[in-house]
Length: 188
Image (cartoon, rainbow, N blue to C red):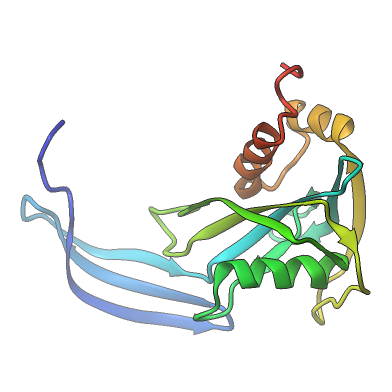
């Protein structure tokens, strides 16, 4: 294993654009060999969370919604942005109940990643909630427009293996949850 240092040194950092929950940061960076990158652009976006929710009868609670940037309707895991200084688990539980009305006492972190580290500085947190139960009405944000869809594990596994889910950041969490639940052992 190499002991070489690959870290860059930031010589200057400037926020050049800010609007709502997005900021563009331009850095001047020195590489370990002395070369200078000017500018290196970083997209500052909030960290986010998603929850793989499964009922006691093996139905995955998902949401169907339109994603304008890609121009597609997606079937995906409930979730959303994490507020500044908010605990990711608290945010995930909040998003789960607001978007679906379901809650659970069986809640655990699957994993956390940097979804696009060359360009973005945020983190993604993925959780598993089992034995979820419908406990209240949904509370959508002002521009949220979605439909709750229950997908039985057999249909879910078929869709997963057929690459029918289109939200790329969530695919790893879907596989991770399916493995943890033992759903993929006989499916492949």
